[in-house]
Figure 1 (cartoon, rainbow, N blue to C red):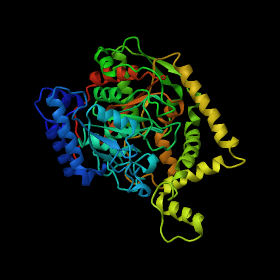
Figure 2: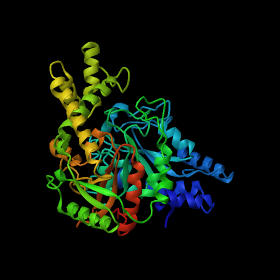
Figure 3: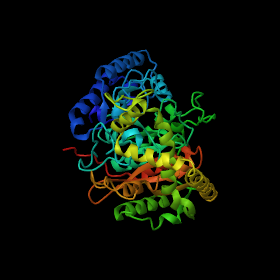
Figure 4: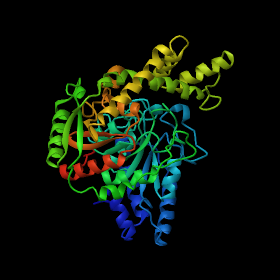
Length: 491
């Protein structure tokens, strides 16, 4: 096995025994990036000198016997998480020269554990999209089939992990942007409970929905990264002031069965529109595996799920229109030159040239919904229905420990297949949006392959701050399912 193919926990054991060095590991990852980046397009920024300097520093720490779980491990970072001294573009031409003067809290935590940053990963512009086709920087392709999308908006984060271009990554999830690309790329992605991970230094898209989380090669690695990034942060007013469990210890003690676990099956998902037969079959097989492990399936109802897409596409654009008002060429962003019409003309020209079509579409929707006379009819009503969606989950979790569903209705689709139809594109997040609206955690675990050999993911959702429960169940399922070991053949 080549070093860049290692999982985080495998690399950690070798580093601890001093059988490899972080410099060798990082060189292997950087070599892999040089080898296939032109085909996959996962990275926006790679600074080899920066990465190697961190790796050398990690080797010194290891030689002194102070190794932590992430010491010397190369990780990729979605390009909307602020990194001091390294560009943070948010996939937008508007910020193509922005170098943050500070680190996001999650970066400070990773650095504290000795992690190495392999680079910044491609994404839909300002995290707005379900395919990573909306990046203003480049196109990211799915490593399993280069003619297909990797999912979005954390497409670069998922593609890089699947293609062994880093050992793990961080993404952000506003409506499924970690879980959906993880599903399409055959890796594990977890969206933590809102407030579990600090959003300080995360460039905001929709503040009440955004959440940073890990994308990894297996469930154990997700637990490792969750240990590193969860926790209260006084710099984030929405950060949860509570103690978090040791997620690695939790899966170590998970056992090998799911006895006593009740898994809810929402009746509203039975006849979900556009569900691909291969996805339905893989989920059904997974249920049989879980049943054989002792899990009990119970019917539950999420009656307001049918409104989730509509509610999301009112609330998220409204918050986006507010958050992105700062990008005017004065406070933030590259200013258009030689404009006419005074300061208003400069604003117009700057935002017209600087922002992509999907971003403009969502700003217009949000601005309209928040305008005088429409606020109560749109944003106010959407907020009320959001509360009903939360109540649906609370009632469901009185009957079950977690809820099972597909992650996405289809495997990864062809590049360009849905770009002309935004509404169809929005429906690709139909199983994931309500998790963010409710603020609960959800995890995507690989559960099979389509007839065309494309990965398919299974989603488990649980109540607030029940990530420990999710990781344990996902870990037991992952071991029992023992999916055929496949690697994407990147040609």
